[in-house]
Length: 151
Image (cartoon, rainbow, N blue to C red; front, side, top):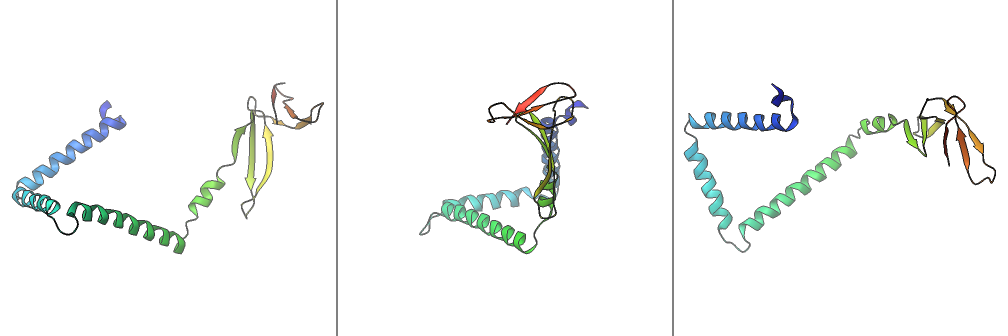
């Protein structure tokens, strides 16, 4: 079925299945009167008045929950630091900049080492050559004779 492999339609079908399933599960035990009574009580509470409107209290409660969640997440990361981000950053060892392919590796302390330049066309290593006016460094590929860039 092609629709199931489509990212949007697969989610639409999944929501439809979950909605139909939850409707059936709540219908047979006769939970709908309880659910509708609870919804009516929540609606009445949100419109009731105290010194502050209850909808504002609810909104402030949601903001407080978000703050508490953020605090817990930050504390968790401080107590149990994750090494995965460090490893993920160390997987970044190549990029194209200035029409050149740059490759490097990392030392144990995270510093970049073995920085080399390569031709983006053929992949051969290219070396820096000074220009006449010393304002530019030119990189010409000896394999494919392509002027790869200047920095």
